[in-house]
Length: 220
Image (cartoon, rainbow, N blue to C red; front, side, top):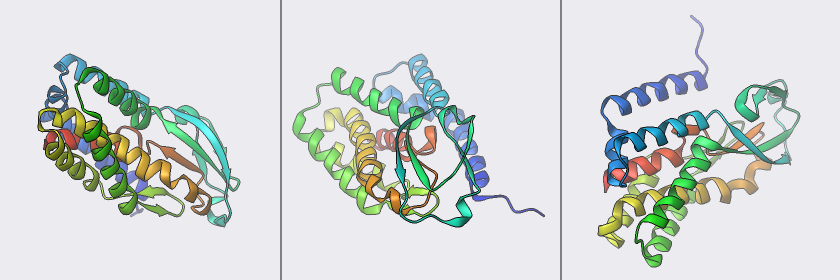
């Protein structure tokens, strides 16, 4: 019996997670706390889901050490359609669904909610520090981090610093903290990972950035 590759197993697990989210109305519950209607919540979710198939190339980094086994592997770049042979360079991309959309929604929440600057800075800095400490470069794969560490931290800090605005603060601090701590601050380590593509926003919709925001809101 053929053994399924880890990425296929992860894909099936994430699909099951998606079905559970939808069936239990977890998406609408989370976004209701953020002031969105059911229609707006699902619209945002669909935009995020579709955006997870789009990667925007930002820069190319030449690796210091290349794993010979990776030279024959291929990866999908923009829209994950056109295959390209890995030649010892890493393309840093921004995933629309897992990175850009949460960033833009965080900006929307910041504009439409009276969140004080002090709690925002402290909470975001806290999640950033935790994300950096718990994230690890995985050679040939990318950056990995325990999934519930950041949302629990974001929810705790949001409730402690601003109970009245805990939901939007948890989302903003969670998403931006993971983005900065686990992605941006780890960019310098890309040269040593030997991976063909490094994605800010990672696995799209189900990357740590997206899930951190949702779970953090649910915990507030």
